[in-house]
Image 1 (tube, rainbow, N blue to C red):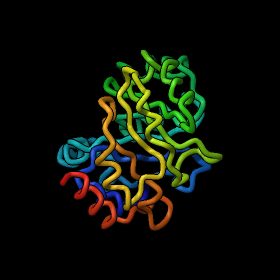
Image 2 (tube, rainbow, N blue to C red):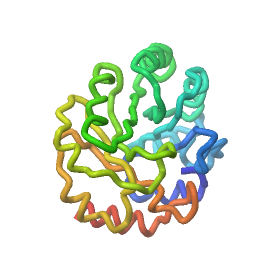
Image 3 (cartoon, rainbow, N blue to C red):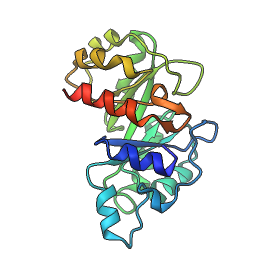
Length: 217
C-alpha cells in the first residue's frame, strides 16, 4: 500500500495486516506516506494512534537491505512486522532483533519469506526456526515477489514446522473457493497483492471486499 485514499479505504475492510514495501526496485516502493493517510500515526494524537494501531498491523517489506535502514524505517513507520524477502540469514535476523528489542520496538516480529517451487524449498524453514517469528511461502520466480504466479499448494502438506506461515503467491479474485479449501494447522493468513491491483500499489477495493466476504462466509 502507498496511496493515502487507497490506504484508508482498504483499512476499512477489516484486514489484519497492511504491507509497505521498502525495496527501491519495486514498483510498489514506499518513499513516504503522509501522516494523514492513516497508516503512520501522529504520536501526539492518541485517537489517530488508537485507530491505526488497533487490530490492523503494519508490515514493512525489505530485500537484502542494510540493517540500519531497516531499523530506521521500522521506527519511523512504527512497524509491527518486518518481512524479509531476500537472502537474509538467521544471523541477520538475530542481529536485527537485538537492535530493535526491547529498546526501539519491543513487540516487533520478523517474517521470513521463502520462495517455493518444489518440496525441498519448504525444508529451508529449518534454518529459521528459533530466529524468525513467522514464515511467508511465496512463488519462486525471477522477480522478488508480486509476480502474480502460484505454486502447487499441496507441496505444503509436507510442512511440519513449528513456525506459523502466511500463504502468498498469485492469489487472485477467482481463488476464494480454493483458499477456503486450503487447510494447514500452521497457516494463519493469506497475502493478497498484485492480482487485486488496478496499478502497482493501488488496490481495487471492491475486488478485495468481495473476496474477503466470500472467505468469511
